[in-house]
Amino acid sequence: ETGVTQSPTHLIKTRGQQVTLRCSSQSGHNTVSWYQQALGQGPQFIFQYYREEENGRGNFPPRFSGLQFPNYSSELNVNALELDDSALYLCASSSGGGVAYEQYFGPGTRLTVT
Amino acid sequence: EDKVVQSPLSLVVHEGDTVTLNCSYEVTNFRSLLWYKQEKKAPTFLFMLTSSGIEKKSGRLSSILDKKELFSILNITATQTGDSAVYLCAVVDYGGSQGNLIFGKGTKLSVKP
Image 1 (tube, each protein chain N blue to C red):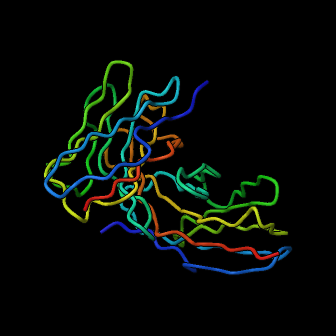
Image 2 (cartoon, rainbow over the protein chains, first blue to last red):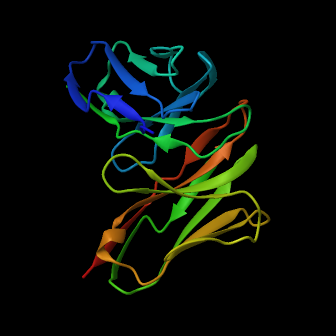
Image 3 (tube, each protein chain N blue to C red):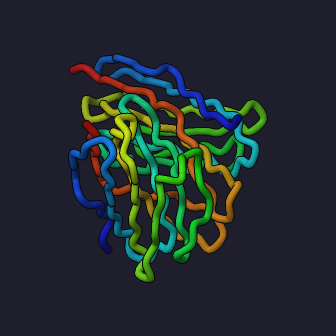
């Protein structure tokens, strides 16, 4: 059984650019959630995908968007990057079926916007 | 506004000490409360608590939930340097069909030899 994986590990972008982060869910999990963790803060919920559809969204602007694929892997896209987007981006997978179970996190992608 | 508050924000102890970490919450659609340990990047799951008054235990770690007073505690006995980490408390907000996690800011625990 493989755990949650994310790519890339870290990257540096310039303000105004666009970025795509990727997440492969743990085997058997059909739900992927994305979180943003700024330095010294707890993770903040961005959105969740369940069976390829967005299933809940936190307080993030529309320039944060996502996708989930038939194999349940997921992408997080951020357009028009701002300096405050610099953070650790975590994805977490879980098996749902309508009930929230414990979520398992990937190692994260460290994004730096200059 | 839903929120999860952890205290203290940081704590320094010596090996062998016992620590208690606190988590209080105000979440409208509460489902369950989870504790995570975050050492470098990925938070690792410790406990999920759904029912009041039932202690969950794993080795030197234990946790309990009080749904009347809206808080949980995480106890670590006989602390070791390997326990040094940020401990995150999160509440499952069941607003969507799957639920999402509302995190506190974490408690940074440093265990000195």
